Length: 461
Ligand SMILES: *Cc1c(COP(=O)(O)O)cnc(C)c1O
Image (cartoon, rainbow, N blue to C red; front, top):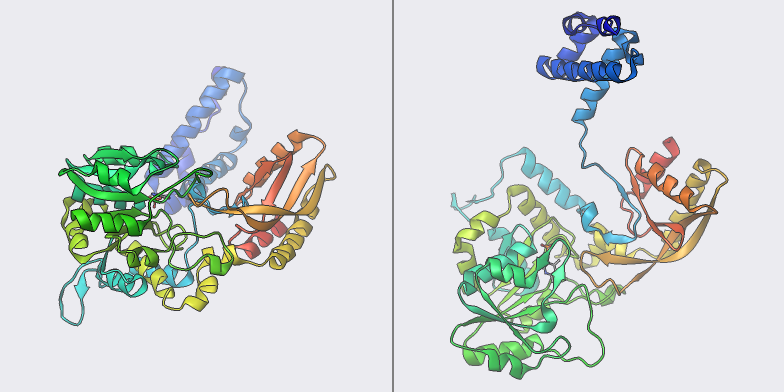
């Protein structure tokens, strides 16, 4: 076996070749040396196991081509673009929504340049990073002020930590939600050091339940939008208006976690109803929190709007410094919110609303095109059809509220063929993420952001 080991090219020799020198220029000495060493170690191990010289040792060129390939791979970003054909428009595992063009431009500008983040240009003095967004949100929602943090989970944590540390928060048993990624209201309460006082039963909670639970240690009354499930049948819950009236009686604020929330009337767009932030402000709720990257259609952020005195306490809490957003997110969020000043254009300007409101005949046309492209790629084992399907908003919006959609379905006599195809789709330069159900693969057109890019990729492969 010694002669096999002696046939492995030496590191210095490889480095001195023209190709080796080019690699050093491209990737730097250290990275090239490390990559060659690791490849040579692999080769030695293979010789131990197989007692044969691996093919790659045929020539220096072969070996260095492999080194180049491995080094190039290291530059590829693993969080790469995928095509969302799952039918879930805001898919948390796929990064939720797509930003509007304006938001992308604003964020890109903030990445490349210095921006007036905490600077009042006219007055020439320091200002606050949430200032412009707070003004915009007041204009849009009617609230007095706003505070922006990393996400809505952080918003809830900040509210609890600021106003209820060591105190009690009253909440209905029917609203003790868990959403994906282990966000559970009781756990967040514990993290914030406050005591959860559950009132009512799972299906019914009355105003008197809240009233009876109020003690001198109560910090506030809390509502949580049960975004991802519905209690049906013999039910009762207390509206924000009633809670606000009760709160006034005892001088207690009312907080509401809306989850997604919306700044537009979803029903007017023929979509499932979602509580509107403006309505909660009108109801007199003191603090309202919601996500930046659910139905709002912007970057990941947690938005809190409400009474000025309470917002300024949130702004002064040390946790706010921990949870604050950077210039890129704040620029993207501001640009997203500015679109809401032009409400008629929202279904064009915001990709999330555009996808959700796409007409079925448009989706049908896209399905025809997708089917034609796929037809050229798939062998005769597969049967392609265009079928009506049901899409959903996702990200905690009611999974029971489905939106009519169109899908290309792929079936085969053998179920294993579908799994093979799923793998093939994942191996594309930009993987296609699909859904298998009822023994078919579903490629739902409603959730696809860049349809033209998808066709282009399929036609090139
Ligand atoms: C989604 C959701 C959250 C968490 O929001 P993120 O922005 O994802 O952190 C909190 N509460 C409710 C009711 C939600 O639906």
